[in-house]
Image (tube, rainbow, N blue to C red):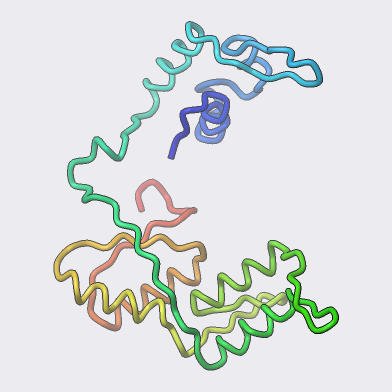
Length: 195
């Protein structure tokens, strides 16, 4: 994924290969950007002529493809599906959720959610929970996996592209697909170029 913002693009190229656009933002900014004084703060604006040289250099190392250019991609379809958690997953979810609510004079009010707490809720919705000591609880009820298997049955030979937030969720889905006899491929962070 790339962004249209050249400043963000610089950080991506630094990550991929710091020799492409350089290791230091200031040297990149001196050559391709203009510092604009906004009174209380500064912003960087792209110098169109200079940035063309950077883009040309980047093109010699990388190949960018827009989704619109890929002929095999079907139209994107976003589908919201609501799952009803059951059993131990429902109990754990409710306990976590209750921790985010407070009661005052018979009325409920939400309190700020921490990032960790939100992640725990998302994990539960995906069929697992990672505890603070890194133990993993896998719940028997797997509504997401069941929905995916039903969807695959409905679409026949079409391909389904599934995006997950957690590696464990990928593993649970892969296990369900394998058990049902479906072919699948997994792409995730940390894979080698060969993989």
